Length: 340
Image (cartoon, rainbow, N blue to C red; front, side):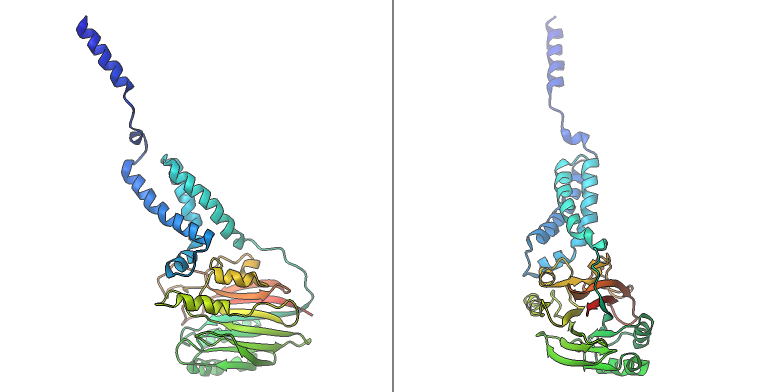
């Protein structure tokens, strides 16, 4: 009887031993480590966007990757729930909701205000040291009936190629500051144009006044701040974006068109939007269409860094993106109505 009693006690003790919860979570420790390894960068990107770290190269890169945080966060949330990693699911779920609220509205057209006035079509392209295909670019100007062409990295060779391709037949007025390499810039216009200034920057950023047929004036800045992830260039990039002129409350309409080297998740660009501008792509629901790198050029995550910012007094009617051979950027175009 004594032996039987001891055995009974032993069986009861074994039943009372705590069960290792990890044995019932699929994948065990290896899956946990993998999920945590994916969750940490996701959390850093999300926090960087929410509190706007800025000022350092890593923060600029993280901000550029913000749109990718939404699908990654959704994956981590589903994986955390499916694999019973509750902490991962909770953290990823909360941050995914916040990131989706930031990013997804760019894919939805905003309500369009009715504005009576003159319609203007602007096309902008970074020519990549002047190597963009001039014939394709001029054909695009013809087909899209472009009124203003904003060019970055315009070189003397590119000017010659554009002239030979017939750009002056479509856009007879121009303000050009062609340079070898990346600093050059220029603007071609269907209507009379004159240089009225330069926005301070390492690259040329001419400010050009265009006189529209019905009497309205349009002031266009060809934008090309220094890229932010070079050695010691982050502060310069921030300063050059901050130095772009704000939109006016009255008077001539101002438009910023070019390669901003910034996405809508970078604080300096959002600062411009807070001072009277609207992003044409964002207004039409095209705010997530990438503009760099162009297909088959550079191995990098696609980003939206080329923009046309339009005075909020205008109504944005259309936006589009085009491939032009010879450059790692895509051309962006916007049609908007300038109030009369």
